[in-house]
Length: 301
Image (cartoon, rainbow, N blue to C red; front, side, top):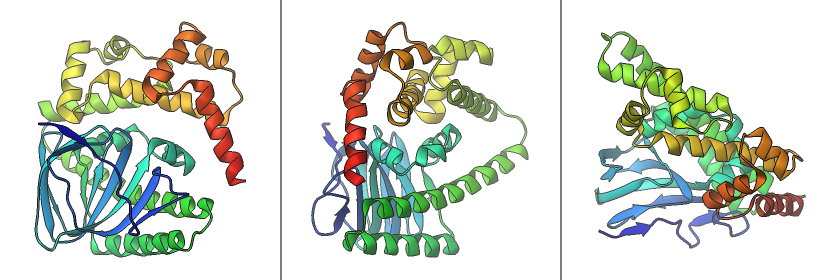
């Protein structure tokens, strides 16, 4: 079956900053995708406000109903959509570049991503729903008023942080439940994955070999790949690549380090290899990326 590209819709009900697709906010969306879909660029937060829906997400069946929050992560595949006649939801679409703009990367970490990959569906209590609803209403109102981009991003950042608090609360509750159970193979695998994610995060992009992390965990690279596939449906190399790109982007955007200095700092063989790596995974050269950020920053000011 053909995989269709998932993109944010256009129209008066889709609110944007400067007509960009980097951040799109939508209210009262009843339509569901058709067939098999995947987005290369966007993550999407869905909050169900009415009805229920069912779909497959990276091979797992998701039951989505009123007061549920679901996070679709870029590159994941969703398919087999069904929904009740009264289904409705709110949506926030965002790119990785926009996460930098709202400075969310400084407040999230791979333990959050690991939990969301394993459990992308979070059920909100009545207090959560009321709080997020207030934020969402204010965000939409300010976007319709053409408020300055910095104000909109500040509201989005606060909204995301509130969601992270709710997600982390669920993480703690689940870990507490796990600790009351007997040690099992599944729990042991999850602990290894948590340790791997922490080591990748702490390496700050400087270690990119799977076998190095596997050796630190006293397991084989093949076993590490197996448990990552089971728990996150991702290969170790994908996680390492994600954090390496995060490290590079941070240096390009927030330091005046030269390409050679960044290459040396992140243990690339040379600046040429560093440039090829970044272009392969971002579609542009490091210099073009830095220039793009520089232009966008000065436009806002």
